Length: 573
Image 1 (cartoon, rainbow, N blue to C red):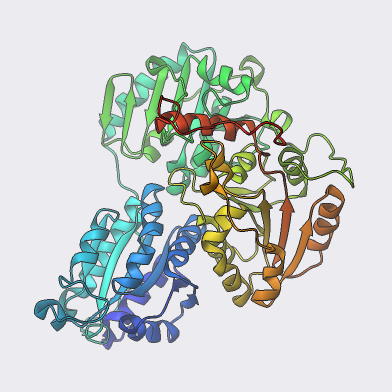
Image 2 (cartoon, rainbow, N blue to C red):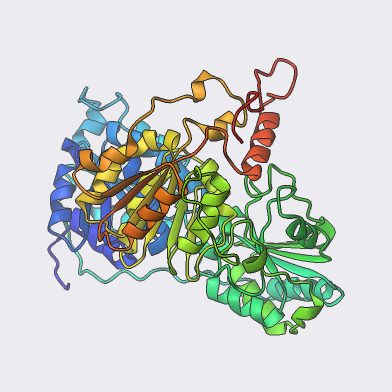
């Protein structure tokens, strides 16, 4: 638009649209209504959620597909309800823009005792400072455009949340400049000498290695480097494994993919192949407890090359200002292809815990158990599906399931806020309307954020299938320590579609009932909600191992720990 009649709110919306935002999630409140009115007149669609926390989770899920997400709430009471969701995006490197509709600027200086306030009007901003890479309160129209551009650029280049507060009296103030479309900042450039030195040392280790392996991490996904990694991988001929955070960095039926590495919790072949490698190249991964099997990963530091977003470390040598993308390009250029038959590659498509390699034969009268359920899911999931799994039993079993061709796996596998996946599923479904989004969630987590299933119905998310795993409470906590606080009130979850006014629902206790429900999802043309009943203690071995590790980390195995850590005698396993 070449107009000089821009106002601050419209300028912000146009910048967001240029950056790739097509939806803004939020909840109305009096301080933000002026901005919401501007959204309704813009090219961006407003998506009203049932609460602010789910708006933040939705923006997180949206950013995993679109590369940026956005939520907007009212000042203080609204934004502080969303802060946990923004913290999760900070932990997992997701670029989301948090916009707060704030009181008019004169209240800031006068410290008016206005509703929703705390006396000092800058307290919410200071709280968000710790979980954002840039933040601003747009106090005047003269600096607003530059501030918006500064904050948005920080969000996109550093892949972290940012915070913008928009006072009610500033929203409509004019910005006296011609609008120039926003250009997403290019990737930063490395020190070429440092890149060359890092690659030379890397090649020295690679050339003498007999069993090299690659471990691509979450930064490959966040910075859009999947194609670069594929090129490097296929030129090298090396096998690769992933940890939980980077699951589905490439299709899992890739012949060089050997499966999920989780330290001591890995399948024996994967553990042996990774830990006995004589050259391990890690591309931008976080060594979290879930990623490393409770910190049981054993990577020989003397043969490990750690390439992160802005440096490369080889043993005790650190090469600063070497960006991951430049390092990958330079390394690819100098790689010599190895013959796969010399590299001990056992593809995950044949060895995953839950794989479609063996045809699943349902037993109609058999109760549904976690292991067989995910065996069935491995062949049910359509090509291109986005699979999202909630922290707990669902996450650990889904992580061990071979994903379909073209599929993507989503889980909050670092921050692990229970209930995250309901809001995130909404964001994923709107960001990728041409994809099927399949959610696996336990009953305990579901009760935290259930309301926004109704928002999926409201906005026509017919591409969503929800599997509600009803195993009577908080299983992930139960495998750490089991007491009455892990119990929850039983709900008839499948009736929620009736309560919310739409969708196909089924209540499944047996494999036969599950097969009937799966068949109906093919023709439902609506959101599908399938409640799946399983025994209370039924979960994967990897979740049990994680529970033991978490008990140890929290001193629950020591004298004075509150136990018990094991199922009671007679419990179904």
